[in-house]
Amino acid sequence: MAKIIFRLSKKNLGENNLATQERRQGSRYNISFPIRVAWKDEHGREIVQDGLTENVGQQGTLIFLPRTLPAVGSKVNLTITENPEEEVSVTAQVIRLERNAAHPQVAFQLTDSLRLWKKRVWEYAGKILAAEKPEEFDDW
Image (cartoon, rainbow, N blue to C red; front, side, top):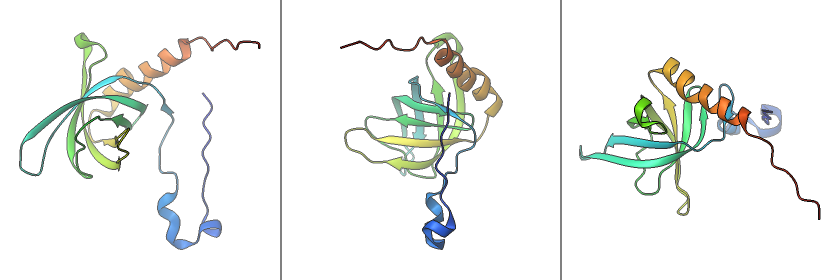
């Protein structure tokens, strides 16, 4: 999988725009796994939602959640439910929200079980994508 990152420089942006620099560590796989997200809201009520991963990295994931979004900074429990007999659960922190009404997303940074996630989610995603056959193009 080719990975292209556009790096921004101080020279081109000025000192105040450093927040837009690429901060990811490692590659990410664009893959959709069913995932359950559980957290407590500001009133202490537990919220559980099912969503889909947009991509998975070694230390985090971007998830589509159709309804309520947890607050930035919140600690959540993530459970990949792709294989019910081998669910993978980790703890993560919300680092960014995309409040697009048609497709709300939440970016998470894992806070524990990094090795488990890497082996059972990230590497698994890589194997699935590597085994896919390229689409055949139609001649018109």
